[in-house]
Image (cartoon, rainbow, N blue to C red; front, side, top):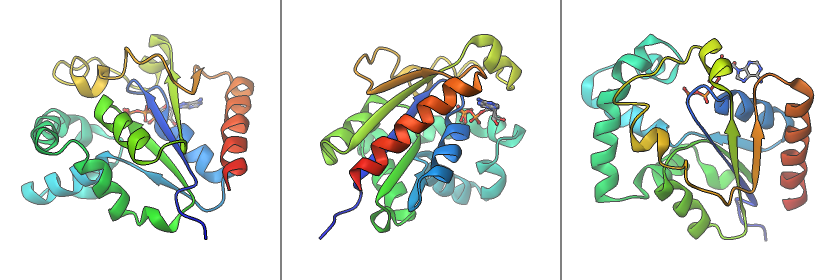
Length: 190
Ligand SMILES: Nc1ncnc2c1ncn2[C@@H]1O[C@H](COP(=O)(O)OP(=O)(O)OP(=O)(O)O)[C@@H](O)[C@H]1O
């Protein structure tokens, strides 16, 4: 009997480093994988409580930026009560147990890292994606006080023991090499 997940790839990086972009590419190359966004339940519960449009909140637009600060504060309060709440809820919401490979596209806090490593020992590959300031700005990054100076953006900066680290500044060959490496790790776990 096989128990899902067989492999979890957790992606971490600053805003506009390319986490979503890379998650989608990995997802496309690994059959039976699912993308899990830890922020999905935060957005769902928060948008419902405020009567806001969930689809707009999940998109990469100005709407997301407008409400991000308020939502972060609400999320922090929830996390203080139960640090694994959003990870567990995201997994349940997306029926994670039906999928052998999980791609977690928005690992942001040490409690999230600890949740996955403690709950699924030996099945987690943690990836740190970096990008130059120039590349991030070209992709639309603008520093926002209350967002870029909070734990949700900087909480993993001191972590050293990433399983894989790479630069995503637009070098397609380099990116493809790293995608191939991660895909192989997943396939070998099946
Ligand atoms: N290697 C790349 N080549 C081309 N475009 C890229 C690359 N990496 C990222 N992008 C583009 O840059 C933009 C930002 O990337 P993405 O949304 O994946 O960042 P993110 O780290 O998930 O950001 P956030 O934390 O703000 O959600 C997107 O439009 C994406 O398509």
